[in-house]
Image (cartoon, rainbow over all chains, first blue to last red; front, side, top):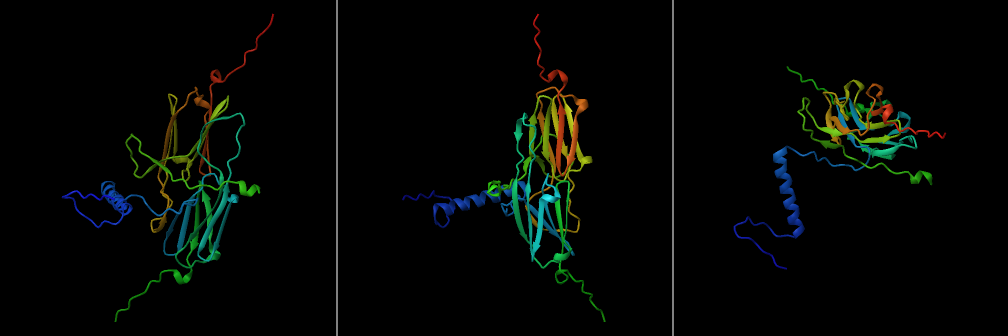
Length: 154
Length: 136
């Protein structure tokens, strides 16, 4: 194997060609980020539906975009700290004589689990689906809620 | 076994677009997934636009160009802190040309559970008619 080094270039530890590619890729990412601002690269679970989870002092909010899915086609359950959103998206058959120009919407089953970071009160969970956006409001367990601590002066 | 045959839904990230027109609202713009199909009488458009309310959806048809744009307000409250973000919310925009003459007065649009159904009836002249041939 012939390893060539070009004089005058910064040298780095030679590990393997793949390690080098990885380094270059990271460098490219860093540079493009500097140009366009941070890239949207969150770890993707790769499981439908994609979910956003937020919190405030009292609740966790889990949201997912589920257009065209009726409430009775959804199965939401909470076990311990794990929220499961499962269901099936059906696309009703249209007129058989119709000819399609685009067919991008897909039917199918799904099941997704999201772990919540602290204990929750499983008895008061509320879920609603408005305009194709599912929102599950999960109250935090009393022990997990932030407590305001008064500072005494005297 | 029938259960097994059903397909699992795959994750599809929303396709972001950049439109040439100037934007007055900040945030990303996405292309909604669509089904478009045609029968002899009409063209039907089904579009997934989760989070769009009826008053925030604009449908514009001029000179065979159909433009859909929907504004989405972020559903999150101000005090909420982000823990996990897998999808972004933004506006929807899609434009396409229609081949047949559409009867603009009869267009119907309904929005239900985040899915827009747009019914675009063709004008009478464009609907194919069978012409009876008389003998005599």
